Image: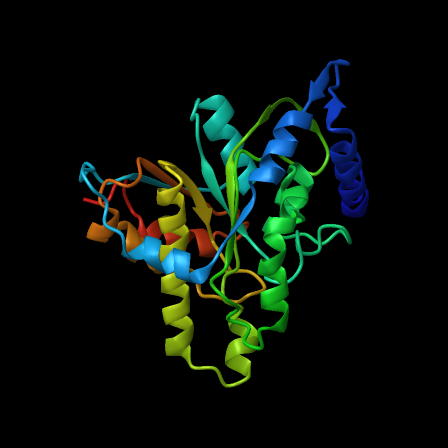
Length: 280
């Protein structure tokens, strides 16, 4: 099955609100799908800046357990929620700033498109409340894009690859946020310092939004390290700076960086930044 066909099948599944498993059982997703779409909301830069400034009150100073794994985002989410029983999980969608689901419908392959084929994320990104995210970024001249984000609660996931449907769906929440698009920004004369500041600030905002939504378990990864050409050590450190910051002391229990990287170079950068469990 081609990726275009997988996208068509996903859209058809969402249209009927459920699917039939390989053994003939019907999995109803209508109520969960409607709730995820209705709950999807735009979070504006000023809101995120305020969240980033907030200190954690009364939280334990225990550092989170941090893992770097050789998994796709959706496989890691399935492992955490189904195999390990994590009840609530927020994952980061390495998002297009201008197109819901990126190139999902035309069969493109990157992290966001993989998530869209595996879940109801595309429907959430088409929610009316989410549309200012796309309108604003489409007229933004800088490929740093803006700090707008989309929060989608308990999104139904029904695949871990582009083909096979799961007998048991799972429901992570999704933060949709664009990494700065470093390649064209730098090629047009953009300043590396401004790029770095944007990357660090926005990584902190991702964590601040997750914290504000009460999420104790996060699934991150090599955000913007593909076609956006951000350097993996810089992305790893952008998150690391905030995870070590007193402002986030005790905010999270577990943070997983799922880095699916055949050559291993990108994953090695995250292993180097997070060489052990926890941040003592």
